Length: 404
Ligand code: ADP
Ligand code: ASP
Ligand code: MG
View 1 (cartoon, rainbow, N blue to C red):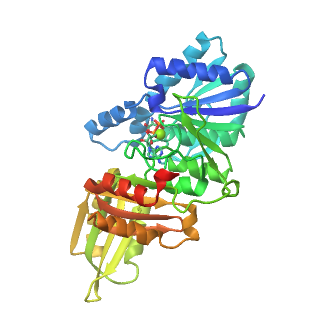
View 2: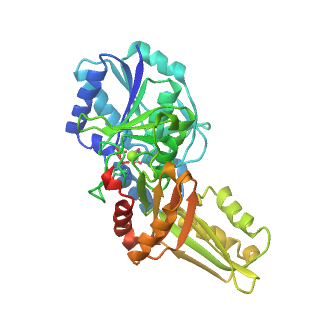
View 3: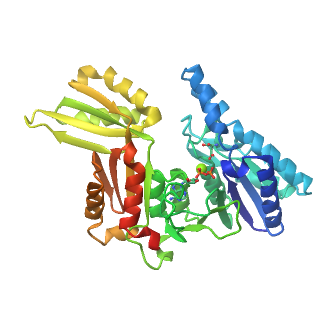
């Protein structure tokens, strides 16, 4: 019998009634397949656990991951119970029971290995394995989490490892849209999207798939389907580029309010300064995204601006302050009132004028651009948070995304 992976996110498992519905969906697939079901915690639960951790206000990564990953234990238990009630041979498992081995990076663990032999042993006894998403066990034997939204990555990693026939990601929208349908009601569902485009959309804020899950799917050439757990429609397929007949110039607009801006001004303009700053960030596992450097008029000093995830801002600031003697800057400032807006599309590689259209549209709406970064298939700009919706809606219009 072939195997499929079905992943259900937080809103899909938000109540026992919803989990009951999932049990029916899984039951109907179990006629034809062995199944690994991956579940998230109930919507809002991981946030609540994080706020409990924040109240303690003490850095303890092992404890934090132990707490953060506990929500999934509840949902897998409930689904497995409901499946058994339906007469299905099901077993609930936590990450360490497979085991899903990760590195030592707490709160953003990377999967190093999955024990397939064990999974196969379970399949000799059970038809459905209900596995907790978002968690693993480090090589040192501690529970790790895979970063927020990490259940997507669990699903893709398992599907790749067991060479599943399908990997379906069930969520609260019925596919990937041209932009977040909760912000722009003219957003259109996309039928097929390349890994590269999805990767850019995820990494610029479209949380419908965790960025790492798309990276992993691309690496393993695993087709993903994003679909609704509430309707019975086909979703969006994330595929290899050669499966697409024609590339869209712009496929989507994404946004992120999860980044903060750091500006270090008046630093000596000499070789090695950038290497020092970004080396410090890298060695402390802080993800730097946009970087802008400009040289001051005197040619002696420079200003460097860059963005980091909101939850890493304090740490980044502390590290820079601690190196004041070496960096010798005149001012260090931060700004959390920013949003990053990105337009993404494979066709950008061969078409010019996309950036100009973006900048003109923002200018017409009196939205000031604070920083720009580009890749072959993406343009991102930093703007003030308050203009997020206006920027998304006007860009969605100007690239005719509602006509798709
Ligand atoms: P889950 O809990 O199922 O993992 P998430 O909340 O992580 O679901 O992701 C689904 C959400 O992603 C949607 O509700 C939507 O608001 C958001 N989203 C952002 N950009 C997009 C997009 N381009 N297409 C679809 N959904 C998007
Ligand atoms: N429950 C985790 C989170 O909220 C993992 C996930 O939902 O994918 O981030
Ligand atoms: Mg998610």
